[in-house]
Structure formats: structure tokens, C-alpha cells
View 1 (cartoon, rainbow, N blue to C red):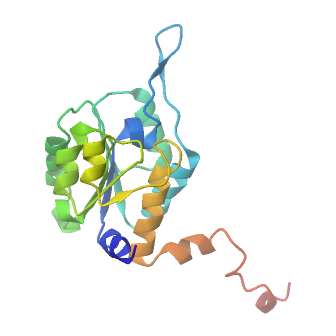
View 2 (cartoon, rainbow, N blue to C red):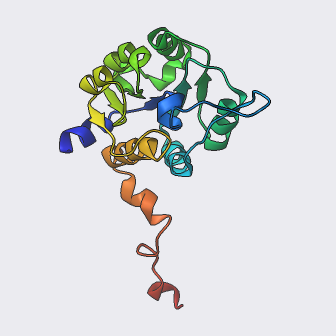
Length: 188
């Protein structure tokens, strides 16, 4: 686990697939043909936690959906690339458009994917993660397999690991607990 935390500590940009990672991978259509997806609130808190400490986030997905744009805005995702089947080319283009002052290379990225189109991008980055129900070839090429499935907090696991790697996890948790509050010093 220490090796994973150390590897996660080098991450400057977390790149996520949507179907199977941020959602459970199911595509549901209503009677009018409108597509819906379910997203985890815990993943949203995790993504927002990275922003608090200056760690960028991106989505690269093969499908295009207005609900992905909406969810990305809610979570504060920095970059959204939709409708791209070749995830490696999309990742390369994304890295090329980043401000050079950020000094982010593929080695500084974590990538979460779950299926064959994600493999090349995952093999290019410094930290590759997937979910337990991912394709076997993806699991074989991943640094970490989360305990939770996509759409149920898997992204949050990686976000927490990145925070631990950067030494920010306890500070982040302190924002939500009373343990760090100095109640006695304030005379309450």
C-alpha cells in the first residue's frame, strides 16, 4: 500500500472515464429515448477534495452526453473531453493544451478506466486504476483495483489515496470533524 500512496503522491491530474467509472456503466433510456446515468455523491466529494489542494481533474469519454457536462460542472472537473474513442490520443491532446507552466506530463497523471479503449491511456500514465468489474485485460494492467465498483464510490477511493500521497488527507478530513477543533481554547 505504501508504494501505491507514494505513486499517488506524484499525481497532478486525475483523468476519469465515465461509463463504468463515474457511473455504473449502465445506459438507461426512458420511454422518450432520453438517456440517464447515475453518479455517486461520494465521488463528487472526492473530486472536489482534489481541487482544494490544486490537483486537476479531467474526464475523457467515448460517448457524448449533456448529463456528463452537468455532472462535471457540479464536481468542478477542470477538463471534459467527450465523444473520443481513442483515449490515448485524447489524453495526448489534453496534455498538449495544458498551460506549460503547470509542467504536467503523462507520468504526472492518474487514469481510471474499465474497458479495452482505456488500456493505452492507462499504460501511458504514472498511475493506472480500475474497478473490480473491469475487463480482465484492464485489471491486469492496473496499479490498483478499487474495492468499490464504478458509480458507487470507486473514484472517491482514488481521490483519498491521492490526498494521502500528497499528505493532505488528514487536513481534508479535519474540515469535516471536530477532532481538530480547539473547543477548549475558545471557551465554549
